[in-house]
Image: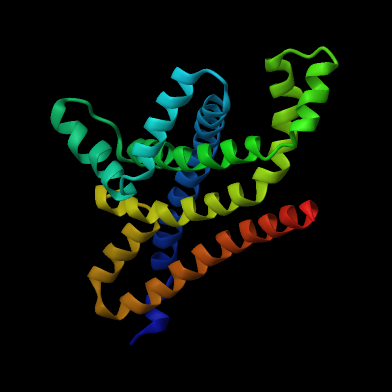
Length: 216
């Protein structure tokens, strides 16, 4: 097995180009899923039965669907109906929807965990329900939500590899193509990709541990 040839600069550059796309997809998906999850989780927490139940129904549907199916539907099925979305954005949309549903449950759980005494004190001081939610409940819940939310983002980064099904030239797709050009490149390419994924996820895991330590 020619490890030296496998790790030539053209090959490494090709894999790094795929990794850069992975980072971009992950970064945008993290932002959008956070927004989606925060909105859905907050709506689920509200005391409006119709909105809360409708949101819960939608979140449960998304959470129980395979992410691979969602990405495939957006990237491969929708174009057949005339709705064409670039593969890059198909991956971002699919990840954002799925992970947003996951984060919605984290947000809802965080809001529910806030001590009722603090909520009652805020209401007694004259704050409206929305003011209490914005200035008291959300800030307190955010501290408790941070560790599991970062853990979910780590899962999101790993899930970007599923975009290979729609031929997005992200890291795993480039590993697949490079490995197909020579059998000697299979293991070296996978090892290099593993190191890249590990490095990125390890940095996020450190953040998660520090956030968790602050809660103790």
